[in-house]
Structure formats: structure tokens, C-alpha cells
Length: 170
Image (tube, rainbow, N blue to C red; front, side):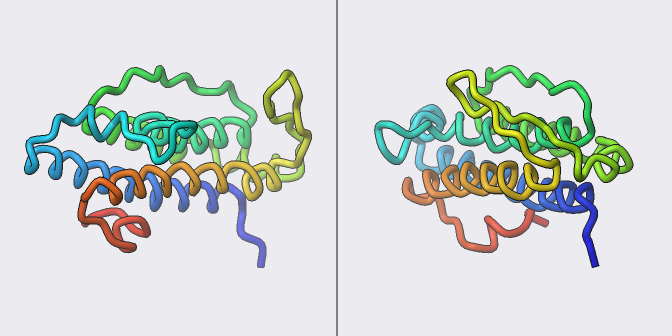
């Protein structure tokens, strides 16, 4: 049985961005409880050459929203990188998920074998089918940046467990 690419991206978006929203809420609660300014957590990075928490969340969200647009053959959405609070980052995750859920399943599924050119930096592009792009580019980026956001907060004392990463709160 083949699972349509629209089902895969929409399920991953609902699960992972929903969980990310819960993780960010726990981060905000921890910052308030410990009286540590939110920007301390939002600007934290695991290593000097890595992005801070805020950018990790932005990239995770963009990976899915832009992925859905490319799969559907529509214009890439533009979400300005202006978040300065946990609440704003959680709202970005929610908006990104809403964008993915609203994308045309029919258009995505019809384009599964369509070749897209993905920018990989330095003016270069990598051609791949939409299905390969989803599995080999969108999902790895989503999980890498979401995991890094989780680890930044966990490293800084936010009480998080595996279930926080795997499922939305509720």
C-alpha cells in the first residue's frame, strides 16, 4: 500500500508542530517559574556554530510550510523571522501547521513524481521528485531542527520527556 505524500506531510505536521507547540509552552512555563528571562532560552545554542532555539523553531516550521508549497506547486509562503517570545514561536508553529493542512492534497499527490529543484546553497540546486524531496529533505530537516529545539530546552532544565517530542499535548 502506498501512502499519499499529502497524508504523510499533513500527519507529520500535525504531530510534530503540535508537539513543538507543547514543548515551547513548557519552556515558557519553566522560564517564568525560574524567573529567567525568556530571551536567555530563546538565544541559547548547543554549540557556538549552531543556531539558537528561536532559529531552530523557525527552520522546523519553514521546512514543512515551504515543503507543502513545493509539493503542491504553489508559491512559497513567507513567514518573517520576527519572533521574540515563546508564545510567538508557538504561534508560528500553529500557523505553519495550518498552512500545511490547508494545502491541496490533490495537487500534492498528483505531483509525487514531478521533479523539483531544491536550492542547496552556493547558487546550486538539487533536482529530485516531490516524493523524494519530502522523505529525504523535508522530514530530515523537520526532525533535526525540532530535536535540536527540544534538546536546547532539555539541556536548560525544562522537564521534557520523549512523549513531549512524539505527540501534541492534550
